Image 1 (cartoon, rainbow, N blue to C red):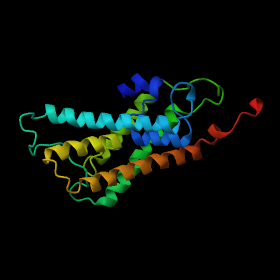
Image 2: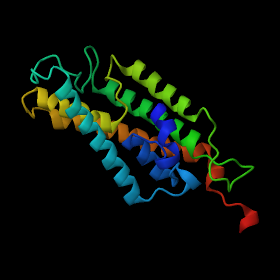
Image 3: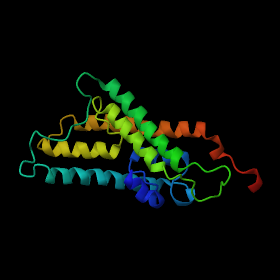
Image 4: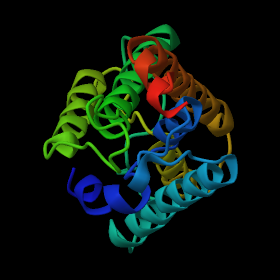
Length: 209
């Protein structure tokens, strides 16, 4: 939440590749001037977000039990928790990632119909609303999927466990592919829902034609 407040006026404050994908699909950046998020810009955002996840994983490995990097006391890995299957993971990660992405779209990219040319219409609570959505999803899914809701976090968790497991690849690619797919689909679904519930965002002002 604090980071969204800090960088929303710089980059849109996505911090999540699924959110960036949703923003790209809606045709807005959520940043200054409500400009369009171009493909190359979105890809750079995603690259930075994934890089941050990997950096966080390496930092965790170095700091947490630094004298025993291959300890079994590691960060919780990807995959369904005990008593749940991949169907639960698919539904949970897709739906809640969609909710997070939709909250970002609605709070940071919607123009005020009274002032359509205003550079930004964010209310002061936009980051709070996004943070609450992330928190709710994480709590709801913690015991089912881990509640990651972010491809950057998935990659970070996977890298950390890859190192802790003495670089055993095993099913790591498969686990990561599942999570990335569900969350990115959630981002696309958020964009579709946004376009359906905010049709005025895509209609031109007749006075300016």
